[in-house]
Length: 464
Ligand code: ARG
Image (cartoon, rainbow, N blue to C red; front, side, top):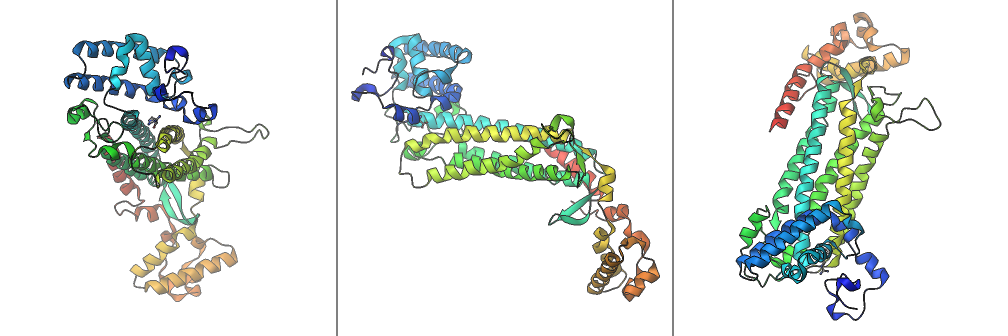
């Protein structure tokens, strides 16, 4: 079979083969249905490369300009066309074929001194840098929604849980902001990974380094990288930077799944602490009364989706021999799926949080007096009762109240003292939730005063 596109064969490597690939091989090998998304970066690489070839004296200025004009035409065709449906093996083959439609024989000149191995790693790094920027800005949108919503919950008393059992009082804003700070760390993590993504593979060619003597520092600057990779074999054969970004997204998705789980639970009739807006609730086809948190549930599931993508990808990297192997092609399928999953999750949570309402009275009712038992024990200790005795005495009172089915706050001084003499010092106002909250004014604590400071710090952090 001829390697000529006009004969229906679009391969860049047909020369040494008598026959084309079997359909089963073509099916698994062809990456265009996935990697067509790389075309803007492929064009950027082609443009930078042809300029360097000209600087190195490998092609004339006329050829360079001819190709640059051809690439502009290819770009217009890519923008208005449907590249995913073309018959080519991959995005590199498609772009060169369309370039040949524009400039004829000159098209293949752009391939001198490079390989798809260094080109695809370069394209993918460029895509990843942009994807990280998209994720970063979607995280920021969610953080803004949280800040706005938390602003409405600074004075809303809210139950806090340990082991998902009622534990102590907090505020709605403090709960919501507990999900804000992991997002700050997620953005830091992505920013930190960026430095390792922003290294240029181009110039590594198939793996041993290009035969064209070119200035890789200049090439790196032209494409927006921080500098070239130090070793050409490493440049084409390593994808640890993909795994690192996938981890950053996976940790983020895991953090988001915890927020999503809180939303699902807190919006249930049993808890009733929050209400999801109509726009972020769904109905049931059978049960007309249902108001389902589908968005939050899917956000919860995506934590697992991301984890699976990361684990699968890490496994596919393990044990690969030095240099490029086709296994590496799977990076794009994984990255694209992961980015889509994480961006959709961030968007649905931003909308859900931005329109979230706190049910103040249900939240207040969920703070039962036992949740102040530790506070009361601490107050007794401050009055001079050894803490161990105070803890035990309150424990006895809790047991008594349970047996008598009464609220702790109903016990008079004498009744309490009858349960344990140390409780003689107990004062009824110690069971007040508002004052229990105010006492948590330590930096980072639940008191409205402390939460206002926290909210300001959260806002300041977003300004940068
Ligand atoms: N589609 C390939 C990938 O994504 C491009 C590199 C192909 N290299 C090769 N030697 N066949 O990794």
